[in-house]
Image (cartoon, rainbow, N blue to C red; front, side, top):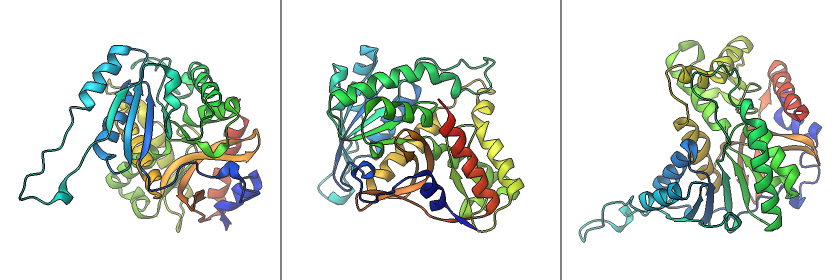
Length: 335
């Protein structure tokens, strides 16, 4: 049997546990200021979810979109979402408020926040296009965009969290990290949450995957090198690989219906995972594993504890550990 920490130690993460490079830059429990870049399908849904569900964690949300009218529209509509008023005979505990949303005029102001969320995309392949890997098809175009904002974050001496939601999430995290010169602990990729959610979807539909609901785990990227384990305690390699393949191409199945799949990613990977991170709860996100530039962003269950990133350290069978190692190595070699 292996432990997940074996991968991290072999790759060089946290060699110095007190290194400031891997400290989480935000105090858990304080209300944060968020900036969201781009209000397309994913960005618009993510913003809506943060407004509806983030009243306890978020003080305000600044939004920036290349289409100024789109930014004005979301500023108006988000601030017109309100809970019913508290009446004299009701409990004040039932009162909930949504964070204020405001439009950002200049992109330099995007980093006047605690968390910057990158939702920009140059071009998402159209539904019906002959693209086998929709996520990686966006890499070169989105890499140029994220490198621009990574440099801007560096110029602004940004000290908060740089969160990536655009595809391909894990390679874009690395591109931003290497370009910016900021600490690796500042970058977090949010893509694995929806892979876990899709695995749960199939586990509830098909009996052979059922144990994933209570014993399953997800590892790796939001993409073809995804690793799903049907069970940590009673791992079945064949069933796990079958489930992994179903989930890895689920976006193509939804595209087959004639629609882009962006609602579940925006909420499962974005909204719910980001809010869990801010609460110090276990959640799926990608973090940097490796020494200096020789590493990769890799997804696993983790939480923020005592100001540091804490990964769930579980026992793994030899076959499962080998799959995880190979996934990490593939991400590490991606340029």
